[in-house]
Picture 1: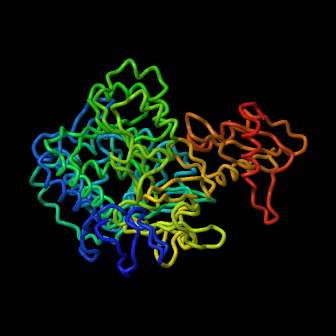
Picture 2: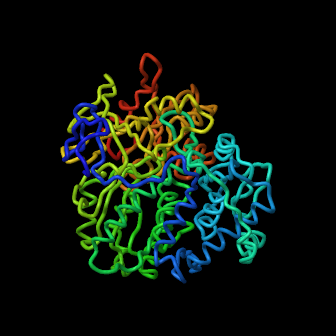
Picture 3: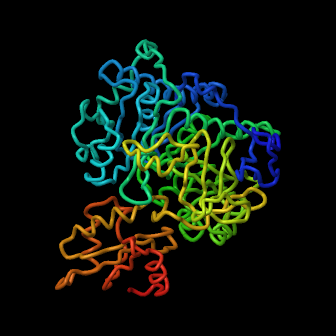
Length: 558
């Protein structure tokens, strides 16, 4: 650490970052310099200012590649399209600072252009999963209150009517909007955006109830990018020779906080991004070979697939140097199995939530052998480990709920003051709901989830939402949904169902009933029929009992 004392003068353990007086863990990373909070600055302006300092961003360096079509955009084209779209939106619509734009689109060359154009105008970007059902989309629209939507023709019919309508991003009209002349582009006046203004509303499942809209400000994203940029610059300065142009493969959806943040980070770092509109494992392998991909942000199930699939032997993956694993903890056995197969590829793990803006903790390459950990606290981040019963803050080695505080922490949940108050306390601490501990060297370990979310691959599935749908079925008297362990997906949603008297409803009918109403990743994949659902005296479902019961029966059908 640069110093071994808090701002209050209390000593900090230089190994763990823990202050015994305040019971706060401090980052062991160097503090990244941040612009003054009062300085008007959008995340787009901040990124472009850093981009201009990179020689790679000048000339014809490729920024985006669509893996399905092979189409490319160089940095100069990318920036021109962003500013052309911003000018057109400002002059042809009434879209302006403070408005919200809803985006329902798979990854494509148009989506990054759209994100940055909207952010340049001070418009809040609110991207959602294009696989969502109409009911799910309607709920998200009610939360964020957009005035306009952007979508390809394949998803636009799921959108409700909005004040400024829906713009089809695969239409000739949109193509003309991003193809303005240099004269038109130069007409764009800078919009004054405060760092406290909302930049994005991303969707996160709460511990109970339905999806919530997480408000991230321009300042949140600036702090996040500044931290990574600072670390990268330090790493580059330590290199004895120039490094080749990094090529990142994006298997992650750009509406997910991990994908959203990694997109902004990669653009700022002047990297080349290979986008996948629809994930397919072999198509990904083919793209790694074709475009000589060096880095991929991944989820643990994809690491498992790379370690176990024979398909990898068909392709030349020798360009791969680094995988960044997030979304769920990566087991030691999986990491070691992967290392046996790919000895020259490093895996670094990270931890974050939508509510923390993404990366709250992570690893450097030198720390990649710390199996089981998700790394150390990001620069400018503080943490506490809190006993969930007593509320006491705990020292290294003891398990409790992880609380986080720092400049990347969300502003709150849109339209839900109660949920915001339950998650953010008056001192700015974010209660993550994750059971964790720090070791004596400041490495963070995720033990379990205090909250009840099911982690299907890198997606979050709220049991309460599925239970609400199950109870709407006329033949179901009661129901509970739990996470069931799955090697490929991490966890799958499993339902315990109590039939109504006289009902003979079966597993296939239950699965089909839910599948018609939710996105594919939320589907129930196992069903067990029981006489009653175990509950506490207060009526709370005792999920731990159901999980223990399900696991004890192993792979047999219950």
